[in-house]
Image 1 (cartoon, helix red, strand yellow):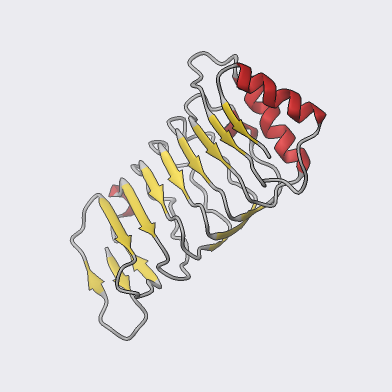
Image 2: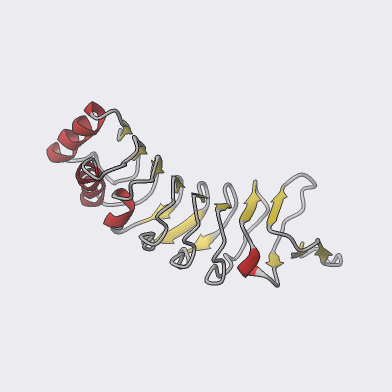
Length: 201
């Protein structure tokens, strides 16, 4: 992995490995990173205000297990994760990401999904809410329409009958432009009765 801090200093090269982690500390702002072997990467962790970054293309990351890019200034849409079939955790909260969410249906091992505090809009793919491995689904503080919030709740209720479905913590606080409808509230109660923790205020 090679990183460019954009301050005129030489690029820093780090030993190629399966896991790369960077965190703020020196006040420097990471502007670009390069990895010659994306297909070997299992963990990608770029956290804590490292600057305005461009999301890499994850189309080669067939072994990626965890992805955390929280609390930065990533913008634009999320790339396609369809090849990341080993992915178990993805956290992109507190960025400037927008657009619709990609299809995570191939990521059947996904357990943690943290997308709060962004600018996502449109509809959440039904396949996400119905994946039996999801244990935490956080979409709070986004720009989803009320109908999309209602649809997520309805899809989660549908998923209760899937064999092996785990109990989930579902956070939709501030995800929509208005509170869920009466039907959404009813689905909220159904999920809590099934042992889920649901936050939709």
